Image 1: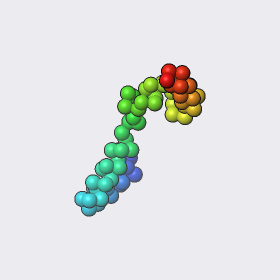
Image 2: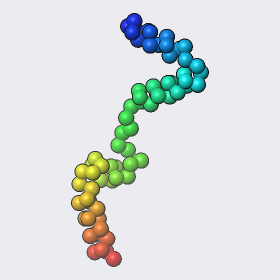
Image 3: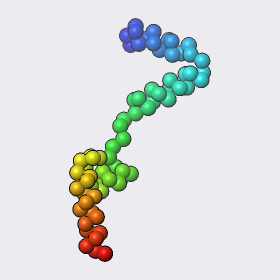
Image 4: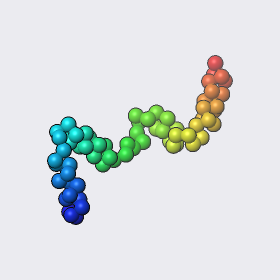
Length: 70
């Protein structure tokens, strides 16, 4: 560990417990991997696209199909 990192760690350890908890949560969220496209995201899983890419066309197509059916 570099001396700069060690100094930062020492400063963090010297924080009051409440601030230390906040720092811990922030570090965990910053180091957590980005969520992957899963079935939890219905647009991305159903359409297989990134949000915004072709969604208007997909919506119009879907609405046209609904009108034809009913």
